[in-house]
Amino acid sequence: MIFDFENKTLQVKIVYYGPAMSGKTTSVKFLFSFFKKENSLKSIDSTVGRTLFFDFGVLQFKGAEWNLKFLVYSATGQDFYASTRPSTLNGVDGIIFVVDSQRECLNHNLRSWNELKTLFGNELYKIPIVISLNKYDLAQTNKLHENDFISHIDYTKFKQLSLKKTAAIKGDGILDSFSQLIKFIFPQLIINLEINH
Ligand SMILES: Nc1nc2c(ncn2[C@@H]2O[C@H](COP(=O)(O)OP(=O)(O)O)[C@@H](O)[C@H]2O)c(=O)[nH]1
Ligand SMILES: [Mg+2]
Image (cartoon, rainbow, N blue to C red; front, top):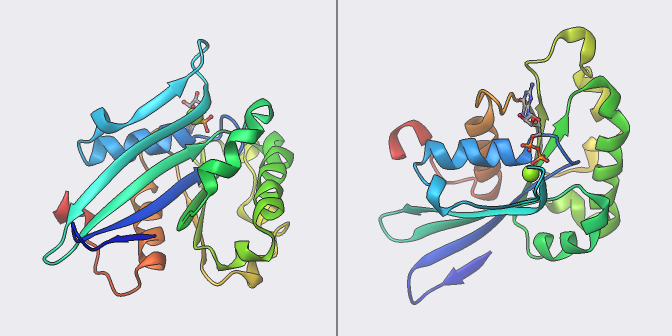
């Protein structure tokens, strides 16, 4: 978090993290289009349309005294680009971990989660995290149960952790996840995304 006293701006870094194809870009695109900021979002895509590198954009909100500036990143899940991830995660204030709820993706999800643990060690428990169980629109038979993922992580150690069911493809739960993360970062802030956009 960076306090810019000259411009009275508080700069916050939020990263959407998770395995490849879990829905990070779809989530971030929905968020930016909700705030009519699609043009400020840069997605660096490969030729086959998957994000190999990252998405980045800025959402700015004006307060009475201070402005809030959210730098929003998505970090790639592709192993080949693993070296780009630590820099994306430097100085992160909050993480939205996008789980791919397809049943066969449990190990992908856990591997990605364990990368975070490796990168941050015990510091991870202090970072506000929202776990977005994405693709919740899938049929029950093809989908992970919410406990399937959570039972593998030591969630009681986290100071601020929340679980949300999302369907990024429809935008379901995306704003809720984002505002939950902001509430974790700024407990005193009153958020009303419906009115402020
Ligand atoms: N059924 C379903 N598909 C989704 C959802 N979110 C993303 N997808 C699809 O999953 C694929 C990967 O999404 P993308 O956002 O590019 O994943 P990323 O690699 O994490 O950025 C795309 O084909 C999306 O349309 C969702 O909520 N439900
Ligand atoms: Mg992507």
